[in-house]
Image 1: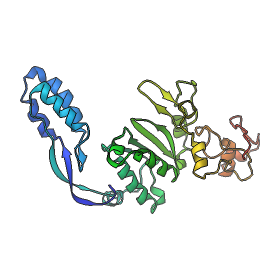
Image 2 (image 1 turned 45 degrees about the vertical axis):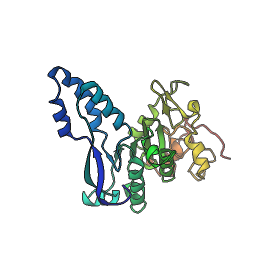
Image 3 (image 1 turned 180 degrees about the vertical axis):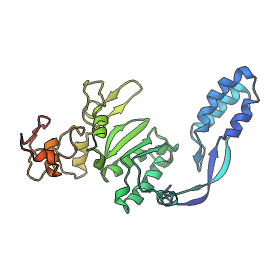
Image 4 (image 1 turned 135 degrees about the vertical axis):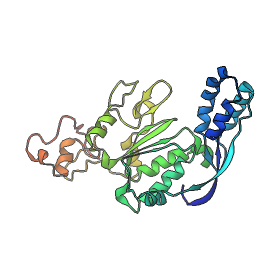
Length: 280
């Protein structure tokens, strides 16, 4: 969370309640009841009941004739800074957040900590963006945290009503990360490595152009980020395909700017992947 709380109230459906309710129905019905209750085990929430909890409990009561309810417990809430200090770690490669509406608060706590510890930004962040944070904090909370992370060097790869995936720009040069970003496929234009961020529905994925979501470069322009290739002597714009190179027009410019030995060996000044779009 954004502040340390020693006695936060958590609305929870416990594993003990799960086992007790199973014993209250006939053996033949236990598998069906277990299936319905498994979702409840993952719906614990700080401060208030999960917005879907009540309807799930009503359904279980009506169908299985058992007294399913939520229990209130006390728990501590930690900031990201306290979490990192307590367990003595510095940053992480992958951060997956799925806290039923508290994701944005956790990510704001992460931002506050990492602004004071610049070497601790996670390479990759996944968080749940199905509207639970919006329901708790107000409409647009999930979109705002994406923008806040973008201002701190993150690139949105997928923004959907299920999960959002973002990558720190420092990790974009990693071959595995480039390959993963380039593996996203748009079901409309039928291209791999199409402009990001992607979005999705229950059946298909759509690139930024086909879903009308502003591309990384378009959003970057609005945030005041330069569209020009980062190599000081290059006058082309950054490549729209970040799986090729992030911040540069092609791999050659990136290699030259970073003094990579392979890029100093002559050859063509720009690779075929360069889109050769003049910078404004």
